Length: 526
Image (cartoon, rainbow, N blue to C red; front, top):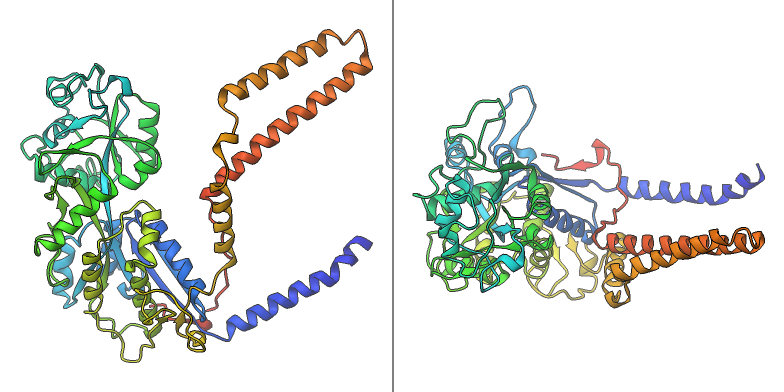
């Protein structure tokens, strides 16, 4: 057809561009780096990986599989299933919101393997509620100590008007049953929450600290048994939804998720006797205090076991009591790994812990930036890794060629193959930032309120009724009126839809085109 013929030149040009791009990519080996572990930092990792791929001159393929801390640890330790042809070297790094378990750490030692923990972000477990605001105490918050919280989850305290709660909340009038929610499957949030209760109020919460309750994956009852009370919910999203739909409920959720969802936090009694809700300062204070007070939380030697070390109940007036460190697990010896994968791993970890690059991304994704003392600890831990002798290291287009100083222009040097530069951009990242800036510039005062929308709908209804009543008087006039009304309604609907799309795009991720990589062009798969 004539129309299709007109498209042929453009189609041929597109094929030529694709062929040239593929030829260019095939001329350089693709470095592959893959990590796996906890789900909480997944967005932080994915965004940093995408940024690193955009900053690189040479092709990189970086991935992170969000499978949970336990699976990340098992894949770090090594093969568990003899049928699956898995090698722990396939995992460049692991990650967890909890330290390596004692069993896994000992298994590594028995295999003559040394690992180290690199702190990469600070987070917290918030406890949230849905009591109507006008039924709270005189200070407008819900205050609970660890013992009361433990007894609620033990099922010993079942009502909000229990004297033990009212005593901590003078003026509180809520007199409902307490609706308790807990996670249905194992999670680091459950670990942090129950370990905090075990450590702080062992006589009130008697089931110990565990990531899972009920039955294991084989259907066998776990030694600690099931939750004594409450409704099981899937993931942080399920816990949030429960609070939004059920009044007088309580649930524990990671701070970032709960804060983003606009949930109301419970003020927990801290080590110094103050009731505090989770805030960035209160969370950071826990890490700052811990790093300055010696090696009770962060061992001086990062190759030591971190088992049993945590940031629960740290001292400080404003310190929040359930704070957790997210770690990257690294092997101490990468000398027998593929050199290009090792180089990518080192550069990626540097980016993640950098206050100039990764830490702002962590904050955007619900974490709190690490205090500088903890950043220095992580840099020192990374410096203990032995890398391949033939590794060509990545550098950054910054003042000192590391990820930790201001970016600058390094003429000619910045064009060398192993330089990562933020002056290189991916269009998807640029477009995403443009959308975010456009959404942030929208004036909320220009939005119609729900009352105004209801009034507009009422007016449309009244006009429709008037037109129907006048149909017999002048059919042509009525027809024009109906058409005008239809156009008005259509404009109203499309306007509302456009607003919804604009707001939705604030959270959208613009995907980059992927490059198909053949085995012949891959370097560093293991």
